[in-house]
Image (cartoon, helix red, strand yellow):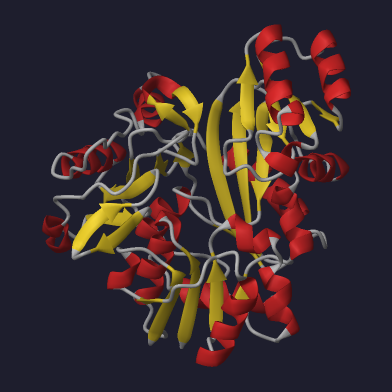
Amino acid sequence: MLYAGLMITDAGPRVLEFNARFGDPETQVIMARMRSDLVPILQGVAEGQLKESKIDWAKEPAACVVLASKGYPEAPETGKEIHGLDAFKAEPDVIVYHAATDERDGKLVTVGGRVLGVTALGANLDAAVQRAYEAIGRIRFEGMFYRKDIGQRALAKLHAPR
Amino acid sequence: MKLLVVGNGGREHALVWKIRQSPLVKDVYCAPGNAGIATLADCVPIETSNIVELADFAQTIKADLTVVGPELPMVLGIADEFHRRELPIFCPSRTAAEIEGSKAFAREFMHRHGIPAPHYEICDSAEAAQAFVKKAPFGYPFVIKADGLAGGKGTLLVQDKSEAKAAVEQIMTDKKFGVAGAKVIMEEFLDGEEISFLVFSDGSRVVPMVSVQDHKRAYDGDQGPNTGGMGTVSPSTILNVDVHKQIMQAAIRACSTPAS
């Protein structure tokens, strides 16, 4: 598999980096939108015999916002209790992917810099972004921070007059 | 089927979440996992760097497939260890992994295969790097990258000569990223929209995934230090048919060579 980080310049696309595996947090939105079964694809790649020529995707766009610990990326605080996740089990359009979390003495706590990836699908990109931020409003841990402008550049491009 | 996923991040939670939905799969294990993954899979306390123990575990449970998320086990050669024992694994070999393990290797690879990339120069000593800074042929700002793996933090955008000199000192003299900074790659700064484009490939067939836009900087308005990534949206809104075609052609060129 191949992951290309690209810059779309006026002169065309330029490859900034190649990776040989899944990106993080790219994988979170990709998996949220994938409709095909992932397992035969992974198996096909591993065996050198990829049978699928096409993957089915949800039409709905997705957004993932990372909730990070104070001090990330240099020196993230850890050991803070995380509140507010129980509600999401009944909401299929929001998936809270865990990163640096652990259960200690029956409590959910932070153990590193990137703690959660709140991922939402929406009828359009605006709706997906809005849904992710609405969900974040119900989650808290001490020192939690996140970017408030995820998707804004993509949305600006989408809504720009042509 | 029994699957083992290696890793403990959000990426691995997403993979486990998706794998769990497959009707083909009965048991999912994750090493070492996290609290979210533990609700979907059996977590086993094996560190991602312990490739021998991971292979032992896959062998013991007779895993039908092991899927590797993080970069560390990949560059340590987990795929080679599994192949030696004839255990199925989704992870590139150490040679293929060099494409991300060494940015100098990747740049030279792209150059050889005519894949469009920024102008660059590789410096393998602090003296050579400081000499480059003196000339600054790409103007300012430009990009200084540590050659090896630095957890997504080895890329620095420098605005002027003093920042450039300080960056070279940090990476090459003070060895902030250890051996990952034994070489640096100087690159021209490109302006535009950044997107991520992923494909599955078995060496001949290339199947694209949906496009993604990442947000690398820590704070709003693309300010602050580089991170592993603070958020994503999919699809990207800047990909048109032409650009898509150009990217796929580059991907096919990259995937169809032995080094990928």
